[in-house]
Amino acid sequence: MNSNPASRLALTTVLSCAAALACGTFTGCSPRDTGEAASGPPRADLPIEYALLTAAPKVPDPIIRSTPAHVIVDIEVREVVRHLADGVDYTFWTFGGNVPGVFIRVREGDLVEIRLHNHPSSKMPHNIDLHAVTGPGGGATSSFTAPGHTSTFSFTPLNPGLYVYHCATAPVPMHVGNGMYGLILVEPKEGLPPVDHEYYVMQGEVYTAGRYGEEGLQPFDPEKSADERPTYVVFNGAVGSLMGDKALTAKVGETVRIYFGNGGPNLVSSFHVIGEIFETIYQEAGILPNQRNVQTTLVSPGGATIVQFKTRVPGTFTLVDHALSRAFGKGAVGMLKVTGPEDKTIYSGKIADLNYDGSALDVIPAASTSAAPPPAPEEEGGAPASKEVRIERGRRVFQMACFACHQMDGKGLPGVFPPLAGSDFLKADKARAIRVPLKGLSGAITVNGKPFNNIMPAQPFTDQQLADVLTYVMNSWGNDFGTVSRDEVKAARAGGP
Ligand code: HEC
Ligand SMILES: [Cu+2]
Image (cartoon, rainbow, N blue to C red; front, side, top):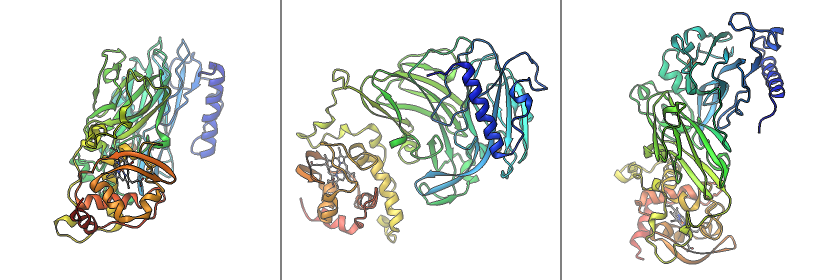
């Protein structure tokens, strides 16, 4: 996994200089950068190295040096419009172009030189407070940087551990809420025990003027921020950033270590992975592996944790903030996909054996038991909402119940749960489609030429919610199968078994 130190140093130097020249915002490749010690910081004897910085969920390779180095960390602050959720954009303020900020990995006792570049297109000044710094403000005052400027300071990380860094420019909750947080790992001199996978996951809140899912470029809502009522709670900067193709991956029998941080700015995370147990945990991201077999761990805003476990059976394991309304309704959910051979002694995998008992609701992940969304205005006598609003509401119902079987991408599971994406069965007969979630469905059916013979239990939702979720599935993943109204569901419900 590691290249040798010399080639790694060369590579990172080239990358850093190329980036500097490309953006033209600072003189990145002066002679002193390529060998001589920078003026200012002491310890001129140390070899210079450029930190290789990664975007989440990647983590830089472990450090293989056994002596200290002068590590230069170039971070460019950019204010950029980024995807927050389907159809929703947000102007994030970033350390390195993404949320969370770049992952920094250094060694206890290094001389770390932070060069904070604030891109000329920025509208705000920014700075950086690293919790790994022993010194006033964690570096904040020394790094206050106007747009188009670069600030430099250095520090020696004395205490190994995993630390949050964030912007500390006023108003601080706004800078942090806009995405200005990340992690710095200070490896102990002897390193950390090797594992098969290291991942970087960071939770954060977003306070938008529009409600959850409201489309378009959303402005920051200072009032919601002051009240600690986020519209979104997300992992790695966006709803779905660890879902589907972007899920974390591992093979059965591999050890997974997650560096998990909480940017906040306000909420404590109850970090949990559904279906896994944290076999080793470095609580509060101290350097002592101090607890075993933890189910859910608290991570304070501006805090972090390191969790480790060995995967033993294949499947999809769901990362959540176990304050579940955040997971299923605000975005704090991600996935770890584990592939490899089954071990039926550890987990029997009986999810496919529903045939004899339609009431087997306990196969739905715990997540689906969270409360249903509030009643729609229509149900209280209001006018019907627009199709977009109904689709959005339907998506929430889908993410609460249907996804457990039909999967987030609507493709189902071969031989067990039929696809809804592109389903000819769904398209052919609307009245029949309405009866499926309303009354349940069992017996042999054919979907897109493939046979299914399983049981779908009736779904315990209101007429409006069923109309919304059907409208959602009929208009997602390329489907264009029309819409379902509450009256149609009502009529079907009245129509007997
Ligand atoms: C517990 C697993 C489970 C859940 C939860 C579930 N389904 Fe199903 N669904 C099935 C199974 C199994 C079938 C096929 C039944 C059969 O073989 O007769 C099915 C069939 C369907 C079909 C018809 C077949 C097709 O592919 O078009 C539709 C439509 C459907 N489900 C929609 C939904 C919706 C909407 C929800 C959520 C409100 C939902 N399902 C929740 C298991 C589930
Ligand atoms: Cu800032």
